[in-house]
Image (tube, rainbow, N blue to C red; front, side, top):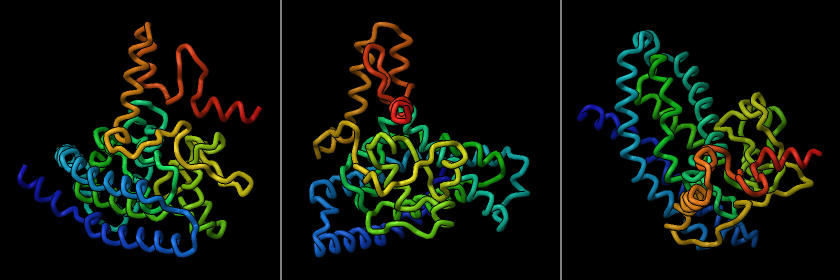
Length: 299
């Protein structure tokens, strides 16, 4: 365990990137204020930064447990001495990590229990670099489950965590309105600010789309891609905004909503559906799941 802890302490990429995040955020806020763009609101940005700090501390224990399991699975992998840290292995890991992130992120939107841990990242009605720091606190509890297959392919735990950090650092820079669109080849392959603005939008057209980390190709392949349209400006936030900056409410409001729905359902199967179906499902009301709303939009 001491060896695992020491390896985790060597995973400092996000720590080194944090000053860059903060400087970028302050630069964007200053530019927004100077040009009167209205991209920031003080209480909202403060809540985002606090959530980012709390998430760092909350994640440590889960990351430690994940690294422990990663190393155990790596030890039994027949590929451990084949893969190692060769350049071609790192290229494969990049794609495998990004694929894992896509499904982790998509399930955060399509399983309500997971959504409860991710929703605070979407609770801001602004999209800026402070919003990027508004990480999902509760999602840390299940996050690493989506990467358990990688050590079985021979990738060691610390390298997996490092690649995950690289992915998150890239994603930070997609949280802005200042960058419009890149040339078409870049927009076709990579997750960009334009694609991520659509992801954060509460417009029916954009709900539960563009779950990419670095590569938008996964969304194109699995049918969850939506282009940001000039004719429909993204409206950020939730379909029903919580309208509070209180930290406990921002973090826990969806868990409370799940509990209330589970209590009012009579059938056990309905109780389970409130936990594991997508947000918006109801046993006695209108079906407001994203896929249902988007299908009605096409009619």
